[in-house]
Length: 77
Image (cartoon, rainbow, N blue to C red; front, side, top):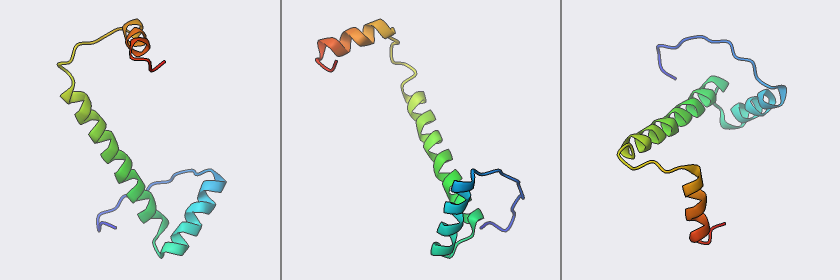
């Protein structure tokens, strides 16, 4: 874990807490390390999604009705 850390209180579902404790024991890592890794992965996925949206800003918008019609024409629905 980074040397500069912030302390935070979170409230977990009891079942998730138990699973997290077991994973920490089995992997010889702290619960904080596991949570930090999961958060980093989630934020990285969000960054990828935002980049994909930015790449498509110049594409024309179509309505929901147009999309349904296109899916029917393609035999997808």
